[in-house]
Image (cartoon, rainbow, N blue to C red; front, side, top):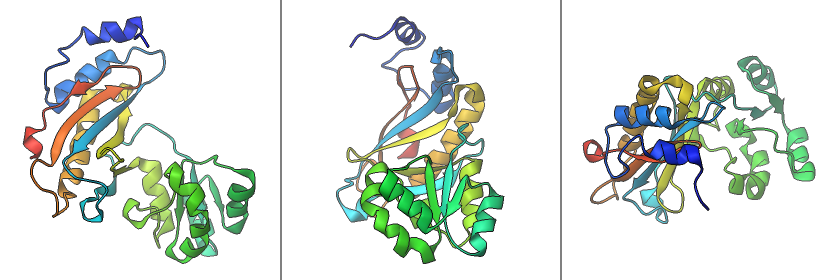
Length: 230
């Protein structure tokens, strides 16, 4: 499939074979975001690990300093006083068996993140085969299973992102919107990279961060030098 005119024009703004520092790369990304909508800026990081091995998994979550620019819909599965706590924290949907039944019988997925409490995981676990393939299964490492459900909801609404390896040993993560500007995007990037580097498994050998690139929704990828992260 041939690339569009705007994409080809964007490619002329920089050298695609050059490895830039994060600030320069994100400045280029903002310049290449030429769509009529506010494009999302994403980062793609290839790591020198093998995700097939349990001792080489890299996964975590953090709140980006400037958020993601996305208003995520949160479903909170909880009971008792946690229901009012989740609602007051900003959860879009709050309930228990009613929403589990809705997901099972109606194939309902009008939410972006599901959070729950440890006591409800036995019930939520019934949805594992449905939620797992969609990346929606709550997990303590991602902060989506927490005894403090109000904090879990607030963090997500404030711009919390989860990072995890895919089958190709690559982490894909949102950094924000083009409208943030290069400086704020770079601050988000630096916080994310610091967390990923700290998550290096003991079993990882050799070069940990193999490659890194950033791109806007409709724009080309811009390579980032990874020497400082190894």
